[in-house]
Image (cartoon, rainbow, N blue to C red; front, side, top):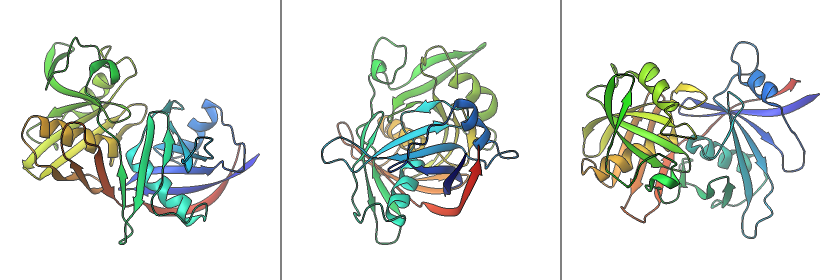
Length: 276
């Protein structure tokens, strides 16, 4: 079969998007992996499906599959691309959207300058909600990786995250420690792992190892998680510019019980069809 797709990217975090609002595209794990492979398929970090929602006052349903074929709960850069897609394709004329995900509702807003702000919801800090194996909420948790002890912030922004503070992201052990922490037994659903270098109270540098993908050029939920952890440690202000390898995001968090707001670009790359 031949299916049409759109390739989009948010700060180099790239996506293949399928319009399933009037179709019934269903892909196997092997097909997803094939499409995502960069030298044999199209190439992407995640596949996104735009679907109709049967919930009242909800515009669309948003489904996300990592390059390894696993369906996951949330993706921040993908959410911005999702919003840009449904507007550009004429699926809606709204500038403020309500979108259903596996982890709850998110609310993207198209800004006048073309950037997109996404209300990512209230961060989840209770270990049982992340999920993360711990007895109580802590600012940081000690965790063993092999014979080495690290301190992490553990948090969910619709998906589980571990956040480590480092002196330099250039020398951070993203591929080694990131890969091991992503699969750590204390994260029963695996985790995205962020390495955060604090420049000053309103600027950080960040590299992220994403579960089922590896290191990506940007991670929207990782940026949100890092800023929340930094604020809880009283190291960051309420509005922070996050510098990722693929570009910048602005993250805003007003503190406990407040939603995290993420603002950044979403860019159309090309249209295509693929034979499966």
